[in-house]
Image (cartoon, rainbow, N blue to C red; front, side, top):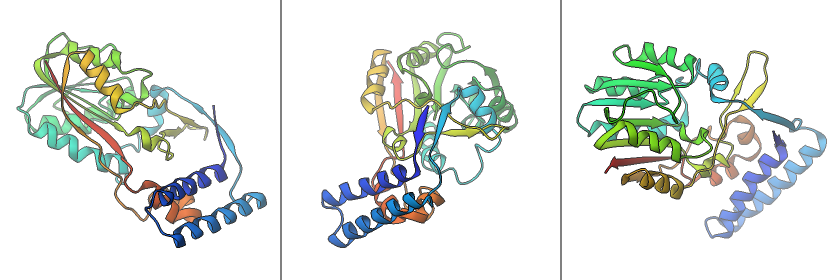
Length: 283
């Protein structure tokens, strides 16, 4: 259960902005504006103008994606906008073969792989996401399964993709062991996740069920070293690592943050990695 206080969220952004100013990124006028804004936020909190604090629980990925599947691919998902071009550039340069899209979600990467000539199998734990994936990539095969126990034979694929899913796991090693098991020697693995730093900017995925109850999906804070350790331990070599930044946006952070602290939010997001994308090769 996470306790969420609106003033704490706003003041956290102000604090990040002030720390960047302390490091020399902004001038005295910027600092004074942040201090003034902080006073305004505290005054608004005392008057109840920011809304109530609340507590939000956690749900599993099957239940969470049951709600999220309906809107997951709608335009304007800023994380997908950052992640997808990099993943597609990497896999687009690889020869066509047998590809596994692990935690395939709505099938956006499976569809791209199929369009590039790959024979594709997609695996996901969510039957709701798989229903969308089958429509998005009718030429692919889709099977329900878990990242830590993939329903795929040993050494049967040339490429594995796993997008925006590993952070839902409590540990990386079981999934990387499965990726190594199903890949042929010399095969490629491409993974992506929200960057752990962005999870602290409010980037933890949440869903709202039919009764209006909000719950968060699991979100482990895996640092780059954790991916390297899990991958190398499973027999992979690192080919590339990308940490794309959040682009500047007039809507970044959402309407609540922008109403009270737009400049602080922009400063907090500036030069902050949005995602981490890895390219590994099976030794």
